[in-house]
Image 1: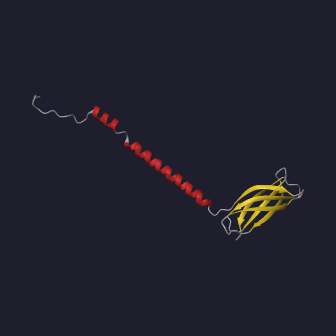
Image 2 (image 1 turned 30 degrees about the vertical axis):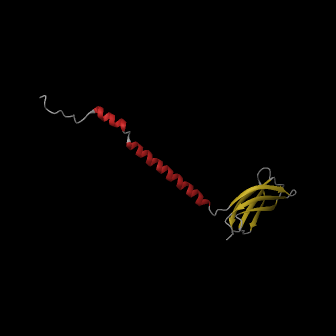
Length: 141
């Protein structure tokens, strides 16, 4: 070797490669975290959209309470929520202390401009009822 010859850097320098790796963390790993986060956000948005769209136009009932009118009758008080202008038929069930059915009534709920309506339904029973509930409500065709 002569002292006047130009020196060239070797093609591969492990120290330089390590310094570059520390300066730029694994970009591929960040990319996959970003894609995973995006997929989670899309799945959450779709779940919320489905939940909201599935309940639109649904008929629901909420038991409020009951009153006993003697030994053979109970009055069930409940709210129904439905699309405005929809008439309903609800099934009200009275039960005794063992939760056996002791009376049933099909209660008509007329159409209304209000989406939620409070209903009082008197159910005749075969024995003393201690509770009552709304079994179901359905729109009248």
